[in-house]
Image 1: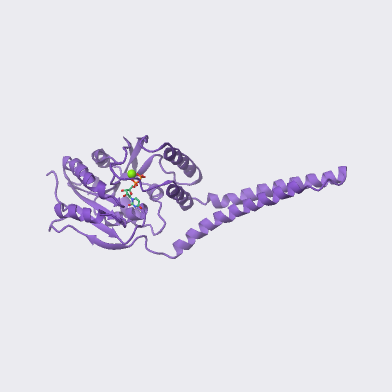
Image 2 (image 1 turned 120 degrees about the horizontal axis):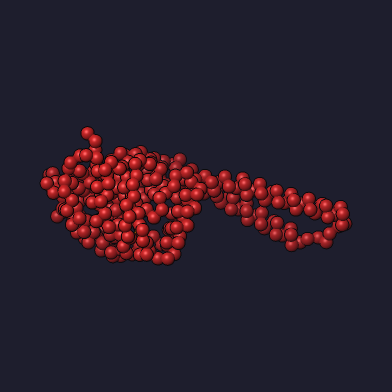
Amino acid sequence: MNRHESYPLTLSLVVPVFNEEESISLFIDQVRLVLERISDIKYELVFVNDGSRDGTLATLLEHQAQDACIRVVDLSRNFGKEQALSAGLQMARGDVVIPIDVDLQDPPELIEPMIAKWREGFDVVLARRVDRSSDSWGKRFFANSFYRWHNKITDVSIPENVGDFRLMDRAVVDALNLFPESKRFMKGLFAWVGFRTVEIDYIRAPRSAGESKFNGWKLWNFALEGITSFSTVPLRIWTYIGASVAMLSMVYALNIVLRVIFMGVDTPGYASVFVAVTFLGGVQLIGIGVIGEYLGRTYIETKRRPVYLIRKIYEAKTENGSERRRGS
Ligand code: UDP
Ligand code: MG
């Protein structure tokens, strides 16, 4: 049978959490409120505790004792959001899977329209932020430039203003679970797999509690990660830059020779030599840096280390546990 027509539908929400003890209760309440209203679904909440150092795990387990829909995957340390998401996607059992942030910046109210789109036959339903005024000016500017440049130099374009919040069909999740790479830029991987995709719009709210876990430096590295994992343009561009610089120096050399022939010996030019040497030195160092970046990732990938390690999986105690029937 076509999965898009299956009733009741099983939904997995995948929630990576890192030091989020203040946000969890509010999140669970809100989500439950929304999900109770949707008819004909069973659901599970897969929390991935990404090495939190506060009471996050304890809070999750308290909630699990009350609610059999909650599953908790405890990672052995903080691996980062991308890795935590990968762990959650591996664990999720639903026909459709939605990764969602615990800080309620991804509005749970969107789940119902997303499911409606999925019922229409789409495999991926993206939630596009039409208004990011809850993010700082710097973050918005940085994000916009990133998408523009990333999409110019890579083959798979990432849709702009789309985060990890999206609905994915089981087939898409199975495809993502096949990726062996240990450096994971999920936004890129999500775009790479393709499938029938549709967008719906929403307005991004400010964080419900706590602080953003991504500072400027982390975001910068994240952007580099995105570009270097999906494009070899930064490597190839050095051939062209090198060739142009070499051509220019040939022209300049020719100019010097002609001047010596027609106008006699020039006064020795300390400045031009100094400039040429330092400029070329700089260009070479950048080139080596870029090669190093790619060599570095080749090195990491060849080690084939696991993407994340699980310390323990906590399943709800109740017999018919995590897939309690809803709305029927
Ligand atoms: N997160 C995580 N591991 C990390 C950093 C963040 O699992 O190393 C989770 C975090 O708990 C939250 C989600 O990723 O559920 C988004 O993080 P945050 O709200 O800090 O990011 P922002 O919304 O500022 O981009
Ligand atoms: Mg957030």
